[in-house]
Image 1: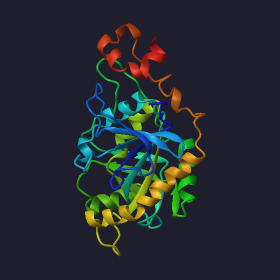
Image 2 (image 1 turned 60 degrees about the vertical axis):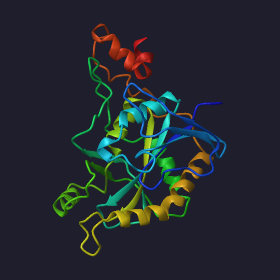
Image 3 (image 1 turned 90 degrees about the vertical axis):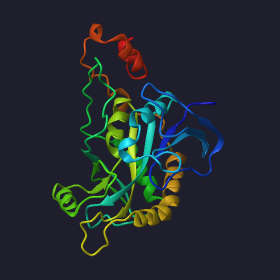
Amino acid sequence: MDSQPTLGIIGGSGLYTISGLEDIQQHSLETPFGKPSAPIITGRLKGKQVAFLTRHGIGHHISPSEIPFRANIYALKSLGVEQIVSISASGSLREDYAPGDIVIPDQLFDFTRDRKRTYFENGLVAHINVAEPFCARLSQRLYQAARDTGARAHFGGAFITVEGPRFSTKAESHTFRSWGMSIIGMTTAPEAFLAREAELCYAVLAHVTDYDVWHTAEAPVTVEMVIEILNRNQSVARQAIFNLLADFQETRDCECPHALAAAMITQRDRIPPETRKKLSIFVDKYLA
């Protein structure tokens, strides 16, 4: 590559390619946490170097619980990515977030059970601060970029991540609404937490595809329903990325680049050499 990517884009359900990429290169990477979901594609988009990864693999063959989240984030960081926009399908848990809308959430609730949520284990402990799980600076810019497409966009709301791959029961959906959740999906946790551990800025552009199963005036969510909305909104997602890149802020004046500074608690002489080597891409600047 001529230069490191300005932006990493993780495509979720319905967004498997980015049109308009020039000088394309494909990177088949191996990480200490296995292979990413798919080869990472880099290229120039609107004059900026970007990296694109399809979260569910080529042909959408990876179930939410089987996504190699740690490998995905590690691979993007290894290419020099510092900021990530995640494109995600979501169900709405509130009346005013309608199918076809775009939501940039500002909070996250992890309701998954079977996923690795951290890089820090095997003798190196870190307690990362995720009170604000998304980068506020990048999220605000992404919101403006989405609004500039002309689509109906909303800023804010709690995004609950469930294990999947099944959709919710009505009892679950009503419970999530009673908890104050705004949208529901299957992949944002632990992705957001791992991005914070990797000291990357991370924001989500969520497509509302349905009203989950709580809305009595709407049909319960189906795959066909989700795909119909996603196909309709693909151009919105791409245009939002174009808009974001047109006035992209590469300088990171947020706390994300220093997230690990006060997070690691293990005494240096107690860190196993193999663990330190495995996490060197994250910790060397603090432990060197």
